[in-house]
Structure formats: C-alpha cells, structure tokens
Length: 83
Image 1 (cartoon, rainbow, N blue to C red):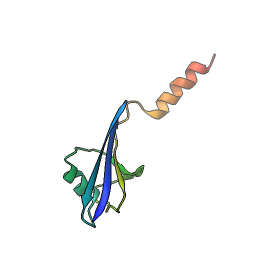
Image 2 (cartoon, one colour):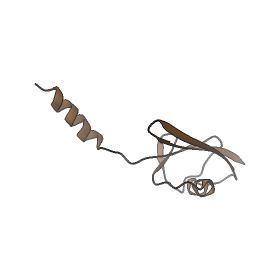
Image 3 (cartoon, rainbow, N blue to C red):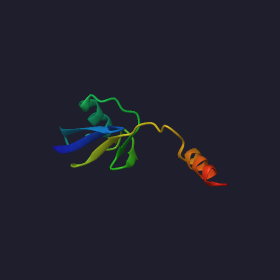
Image 4 (tube, one colour):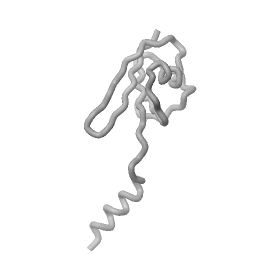
C-alpha cells in the first residue's frame, strides 16, 4: 500500500485529500479514486501524465490553466516602466 496526497488550489483557498492506494497505482487511477476532475497534473511540481506510477508519499497537484501568458505579462510590465 502507498499513501498519496492530492492537492488543488484556487485564489485564497485550497483543498487536500489523502488516499491509500495499492502499489503500482498510476496518476490516472489515483484521480479516478479521488473523484476529482483534472486536466493537467504534476507530481511535486513536475508535470506528469496519467501513466506515471506513484510512490509512497507522492503529492499530485492539479494544475489550473494560466490566466495570462507569462511572456506577455512581463512585456506589459516592462513597457510600463519605460519613460
């Protein structure tokens, strides 16, 4: 048996769920067991696909879509600083 944590977050709040699963469980199987919907996920901040086999103590993070492209946001901030 392994124990993994699932985490999802929104502005100013988050939710965490611990699951006890069988050895050899994949990310997709863990998500199915949790009942949570997810698009992109990461394990300890590293993007992962549904086929990744989990280890005891892993943290699966459900990633939210970006609101703005980080490159565009940096460009806009830089343009505001130029006199």
